[in-house]
Image (cartoon, rainbow, N blue to C red; front, side, top):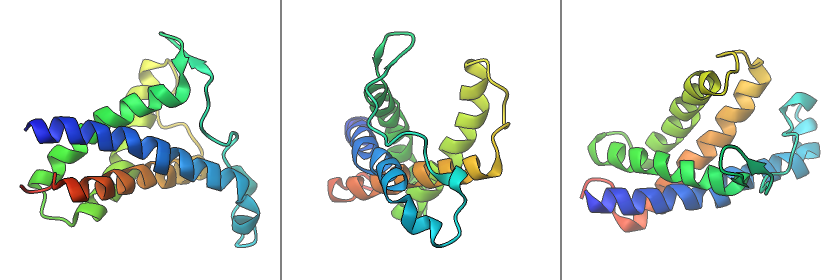
Length: 150
């Protein structure tokens, strides 16, 4: 259980820096490639990631806040990986892309006083890709640590 807590948190937090923010960075700076495939302009993230803008209530940089919450989600993903029969990378992709996104657009939105499930389809797609990259990356980072089943 200690392995799930420690490695889950560390891999989830590290995945934010490498995969989550890396995907935002790539989508922002390499959007011209996606545009040639017919991806609409609204799919491009407004920022290039790695934001150090202070966020309430503690005023910590946004990327550090995201890393902390990525670590918390990483613990949940590590626990899930121990008990699921799906392949670990598929589990990470689905967990990040679907579960984290759905929680973000419902519970987190409600806690922030925003309307739930109100984003456009393009915003949903972009967030699913970004969160899916986080989940896939976290599961990938957990592989050599043998967090899953053992």
